[in-house]
Image (tube, rainbow, N blue to C red; front, side):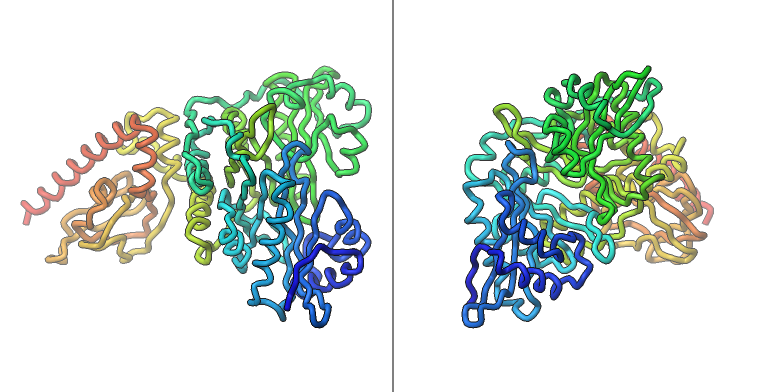
Length: 531
């Protein structure tokens, strides 16, 4: 029989051995292998460590913990992590019991519990969902073990936490789909307001940057914006906690000076073992310093430290900061309702990340809700990668006629790239269709099933599958590549969601599609007459 109890100092060697049995020596948190630091974790008031013990032998067969101070002190946020079950005792529901016991023991100490669940294997994801955690995000390539792994982010709420939530956050369009999914998963009415017009912070002025030293600390304390007022970035530490505490937490600040005077600072932690940077605070005397500070930090991560993953938690009520980060290469990866306590309400948070490489991720083994979330996140990263190529290739195409620059970018942003070799079939007559191809280069032959003869040729700048896009109907002809072709693919569901948010784009698009289809029909008719 296996019992779950709180760990003591005597259990430390066994906890260490359990992690060695599960992860070898490559687990990223070095405290797991250091018995002195493990002992501190066991006796710390800021953490809960449990063990699963086989009663007959007294053997420790599993362990799990909760970090009770993930957020700021007043946020009452904890992270459920560091779970390991000895390989010899798996499939005995030890992990389920460890999670159930942790939930019971922290229920009166937390308002929000978070789980970052591994996806390879996805056992912790299934376990967390089964215990009431809601999927609120997907963090691609965020965790460095033997290689970069992706994590699912889940949240659980205790007591009346969600009743304290501030309603109607304002988010940019890139965040909206993610917010909608997360709010529904948390059984909340999706109430995020899409802000199409919020501008990014400007890039102005000439600034000098340096690391925070004691002489700059007092000057920063006199800047209220971002430190105690109008906070847009959140994290577990803040400047006013004190310089010595910041140093103990290995927190760093990049200071911006102009004319010798301090104009702002961005706080961050750099974890060399995880090859990551987390931004936790942004302090600014005025708007003009915000973007240069963030841009300078991103540049340092890329060029000086070789960081692979950057992350920041942004207020869901501050679309200007969201837009600024998107323009600097960050993408939304999670939406966490009621995460941060501010004055008398709990605020939603958008977690955004910056990857230095393209995410190479498989989501086939995920739960349905986690897969839907992962798809929404990865679509944004794919859009960021293919958008410049699509934008360059389709400038001036009839499909995009009449669109202004902002409308054009929104439409191109929901497309993806694909390619076909000569003789390869793009789609067949009668095949179910739900997407349209904009031919970027090459030529495509159009033929009917009852004839091998080509009845039309679609060239660069023209479209394939318009009716399937508009109605999701089966294709009325077969399309085959005559040469190497590249297309921008626009899906029915993506288009419907875009037009729901932006009917002005739909008006131009439908008009252009109608004109384009008319021109193609004229060519087909002429071809048939010649026969």
